[in-house]
Image (cartoon, rainbow, N blue to C red; front, top):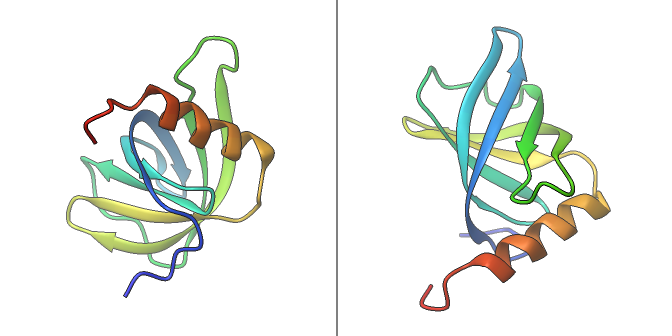
Length: 105
């Protein structure tokens, strides 16, 4: 069962997750105003652990967005992160991703 309040949007955004082990790089595969799924090539992060993340925005105007999130779930391929703050920049990012998505998705 899906408990999300906002629909996920397909994405391909470069992400850096800053955790207790250091910085882990990955790609956001989908996101919503409430969270993001990040594909990782390294070990899975601890469930319920807090992280700080940097999303490299899809346009040069806004640069990078730094957010705090909680690891909501983990898979062998990556982690689902729940944003800890409802930031207007997250809404702008979701809108930018939706505007840049191919029409056949």
